Amino acid sequence: MKKSDVQCRLDFLSAVPDTQNHDDASIAATTSPKPHKRRERYSGRYPKNFKDKYKERQGDEETISKVLAKGMTPAGQHVPIMVKECLHYMGLEDNQRDRDSPVLVVDCTLGYGGHSSYILKQIMNSTDARLIAFDQDSVEIIKTEERLRKAVLEETDTATKSAGEGNDIFTAVNQNFAELGSYMTSTNQVGKVTSLLADLGLSSMQIDNNDRGFTYKRDGPLDMRMSPEDDSTETAYQLLQRLRVRQLKSMLKNNSDEEFADEIAFGLIGDRSKIPKTTMELADRVRDIARPLIVKQHNWNSEQIGKNQAKKLKSQLDSTIARVMQAIRIEVNGEFRVLERLLEDIPTQ
Image 1 (tube, one colour):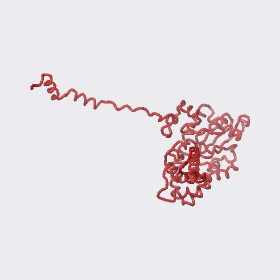
Image 2 (cartoon, helix red, strand yellow):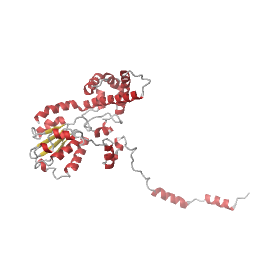
Image 3 (cartoon, helix red, strand yellow):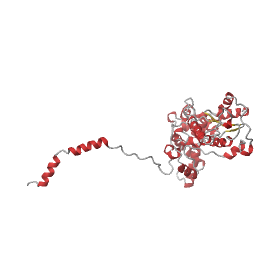
Image 4 (cartoon, helix red, strand yellow):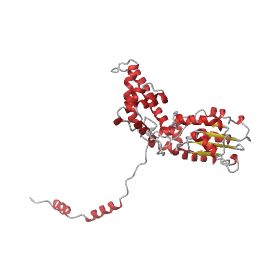
């Protein structure tokens, strides 16, 4: 049976190399544009990971206003509390002071600069007024100083005139406030401080960044150093490696009044090969240790925990983890020791 003319024609065409199409394909291969990369998008309305909250960190006003409206703090920011009360008890309200009297305010904990921004607004029109702000966090202090100078000082023309000739109204000092005495001595300012503020603890922007290791809600290295670039300060993980069970037990009791200190200390470092290295590992370990203790404390049936009991159990477990991390953080940064030094130095300033 002979093939039809159409079939023969098709066979012939399929056997002939398609040089034109081949050349076109080569050109397309060499000139084709790179695949389009879609812009990064929020995963959900409010991302949980600090790195994903780029809109908040970049200062997107619409996003920030929505976060604040929900009663939350925008990522990388810190909302100061009791500002009015602080200004009042430092004697910085308009009706409390003579604008011609010298004013030297010390903010021992600059942080995000919340309190300092309000202090600067109050003193910048004075004849002779200055603010000295301390912070040991080498990462945040640079950002905060730049932010304050741009948002508060550059918008006015008083960045230097209110401090007196040759001086700056605002000085940021990258030191722990324990060095207040030595700093004031070296700068010949002893006895000149008119008011001092110390907002103790840590800031929300430090908690937000899980790479700093201050939160148990997201995984990160067990660090907790206020000065992350200071290699002379041991991390939380290194601290746990060094401590003995009795030392950790004492630390948990003294730094956070932890009622399960004995069991938690042994459970965390009793087996030296299983010391947690990350925040989530620490949280999970504490949770596993404390759960049966809390259940027993309430005489609950561990096999049949009701909805209300489960809610209460979670709350108590979260509080226990927070206390453990607080105790470790205080020890890593020597927070009680530096506070004692500050209290000793205050009368001389």
